Amino acid sequence: MDAVAELRGQVWNMAQSPHGTWVVQDALDNAPDDVGRIQLVHELKGHVWDALRCPFGNHVLQKCLTVVHAGATQFVVDELLGAGHGAILCAAKHQYGCRVLQRILEHLSTHQLTTLVHELVAQSGKLSKHLYGHYVIRSLLEQCPGDAHQIVSLAIGRDIESTMRSRYGRAVVADALTFGGEEDQRVLAHTLAVAGSWLHFVGRPGSRYLPTIARRMLLLLPGHQAQAMRDSLMAAECGLKHHRVGRKLLAMRENPPRPAD
Figure 1 (cartoon, helix red, strand yellow):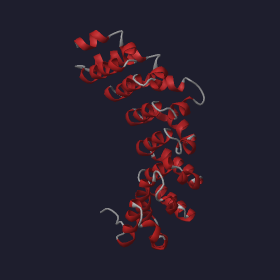
Figure 2: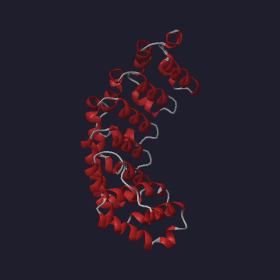
Figure 3: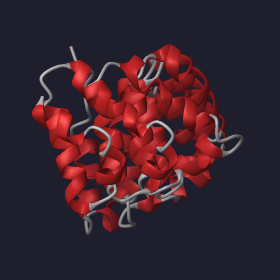
Figure 4: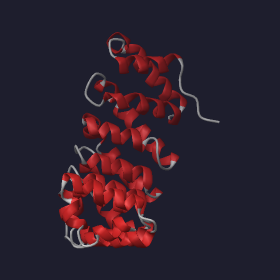
């Protein structure tokens, strides 16, 4: 409680410094109760955008979102949305803002997230291929309800060639095939199979996600499409065996993944 008392009135100033950010985070972790934590958290009211863009303050903002109940951090969402049209897209594409949005998606309630998720879903195609934005879409796929997942999966499917050409997009596709409803996953797997270009990216940056993509496709696709995938692997064997990722893919030809019991 002494640490909380000593920091009172100084949280925002300290959050902006390399040393102060750790002091504030430690106080939030070790406060004896939620009353003390919330007192510290609420000192960031009016500073959310500045904290989100600050190399030190963003860590304090993330900590606030993880250590108190969701209702106490509603002001964070309110200030982000209150910045107007396009603000959420800017936050998602920011090197620190993307992390703050990830914590929001992980820790706030579905009711609190409705408007924010709507804005992210609307921009999911662009964000899936962005250096920082793709982290937010991956959290959206993992954390949010089925309707959001379905819309994002459809958006990815409509632009599958472009998404797969992006090293960041391939990570999003892997998550879209892993999380959410199985029917959404099947539709996306079918879209990938029809496009037929999933093997073209072995050896490129971000190709480490291809084994996950291929494994999920083999599990989700009907027999004739799965066999066509294995045939494609056989035809590309000479080129694939020279890459670590390619060798992982070739192993699936002989030992295809089995559905979990």
